[in-house]
Image 1 (cartoon, rainbow, N blue to C red):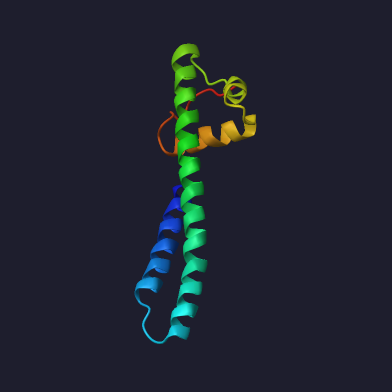
Image 2 (image 1 turned 45 degrees about the vertical axis):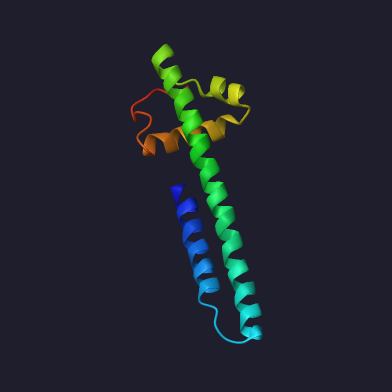
Length: 110
């Protein structure tokens, strides 16, 4: 999910480069600013969405590690009740935490 943030940064850089490289008459300036805004806006949205996913992954991974230390397994239902999100989302974020090596792969998830 870090790809969202990465693509957002890339789109924003291309939009900023479009603004910087504006040369010519006023009509070219208007067109370039319009296209740059169309590239920068989705880039900023992707950066924001990617950052939210990273934060949520860290919060759920931290909670999962607390469960792992205390109980010896991860209780996804209890985490979903505590954080007020669906169990499917919790399991997805636990999987993301495992791919990021926050959570061990051989853990028991109930």
